[in-house]
Length: 66
Length: 332
Image (spheres, each protein chain N blue to C red):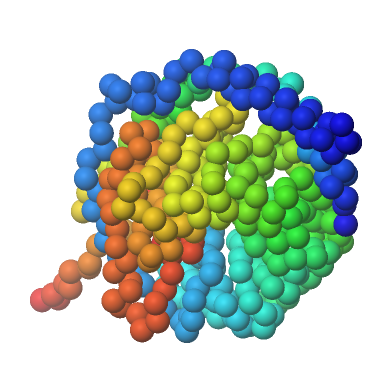
């Protein structure tokens, strides 16, 4: 079990690492997120519903053999 | 000043510096950037298939890479592997099972829970049945989640506040990821990535380097336990679901929260989250048996999806796990 001092020292060591991070600007990163959504919109079938022809789960009609 | 007070002051100082750095990087909000993006059209959700076989609460499920099969875990005793046309039921350890995973190859399945062990099952045995292949022991707390990197490597998360990378063949722990101060509840991996994400009861999500075991980034903001995390499909962001009744979107490279998905009427915790293929839709499963589909960019609800399965089954089933493996399917 770590002591309170050890826990705080660990927390401090981690914060010292994290404070050094080079952060990108949100204007750039959010634009890229939006672009990704728009670029893959066509493949997202939950956004663009399947046509009856494409649907693998459509109910199969019985066929009559004459 | 005592040691503890000095350390606390230094820590607070660094936290303030990080807060400032994040503010500096925040030169545009998501709301501003998506102002001109059209809203999502109304989504209709229809149950495609109800997979029966479990008699009690289903705690976890995971889709295979080709979206044709999924494995589900019940509280005790057995897992069910469901393929498009058939179902394979197999026994597993009679302890409270909390998680399951499908290897990308489709050769293996893993599960674990209150026994603190991650059991690996081989699906492609000569006899044609499912058999325990390895048991990965080492965690000193329950196994909350596991995900295969490949047939020989799996990452686990545990109630002992750590995550682990295991060599399955040797049944050994290769790397331990220790930095959370609460039970780790969920993890998310991204294909070909050097990093993975964890969410924990200390209300933080952490980004880890798989190979060196280091915690690279810590994301705070949630006010209670994080129960689920999932990568955005580009790998550059992720969503979380928490007991604080909110889901949040975090940006990895800007190292901060981008969006909050919440509503006054939503007061219960989120147990699972998943993105649709384009990332535009965020599915979230809630403690009150409901699921919501959020427009991830506009932070609006596209569909409030009440559990129809509640009427169909005899036992209440709980949306503990939501997965969107491909465009057409999501399951709860």
